[in-house]
Image: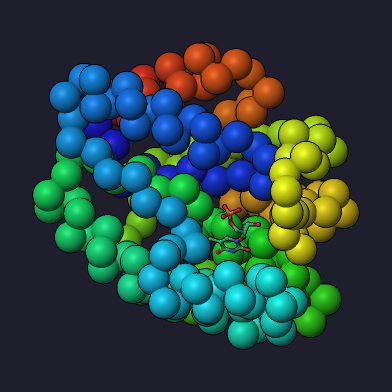
Length: 197
Ligand code: TMP
C-alpha cells in the first residue's frame, strides 16, 4: 500500500475531484485517511495566497511555498503515525513546476535550484499522480470560475506543464490522462494506492 500520496497537475486538471472520490472509496473500504492540501490553511499558507494575489517577487514566493511545506511536512509525518493514508493535493512538484516557470528567465536551471533548497526538508511521497492535460482544455474547464488566480493563463500553464514533464523520470510518478472519466481515474488511483508494487 502507498501511504503518503500526492496529486499534481496544472490548474483545471481535475485533481481535487479525484482526491475526494478516492477519499470516499478508501473510507468505504475502512481505511483511515486524511486529505490535506498546499498551499495550507496555516499562517504561512496565507502568506503564500498573498504572494500569488499580489504578484510578489517569484523568489519570495518560492521561499514562502517551501516554508509552508516544511511546516506541513512535519504535520504529515505526525498524520502518518495516526492514519493509514495521507492524500495531499499539490506538494513539492508544484513548486518545481510553477516557480520553476516563474523563475526561468532570472535563474539558471531554476528546478535544480528549487530542489536543492528543498532537499531533506520534508518527507518524500510514496507515489505522486501527475494529471496530464493540455493547458487549453484545462483553462476551458475553469474559465467560468468566479475568480481566476494570476497563474491561470494558458501561456503560463504551458510552461508549467513542460516543467512537470521534466520531473517524471523518477519511478514514484504515475501519469494519468486527465481527460479520462472520473470513474476510470478514481479506479486507477485506488488500484495503484492499494497495490504492493
Ligand atoms: P490551488 O489552485 O491548488 O489552490 O493552488 C493555488 C495555486 O498555487 C495554483 O495555481 C498552483 C500554485 N502553486 C504554486 O505555484 N506552487 C506551489 O508550490 C503550490 C503548492 C501551488
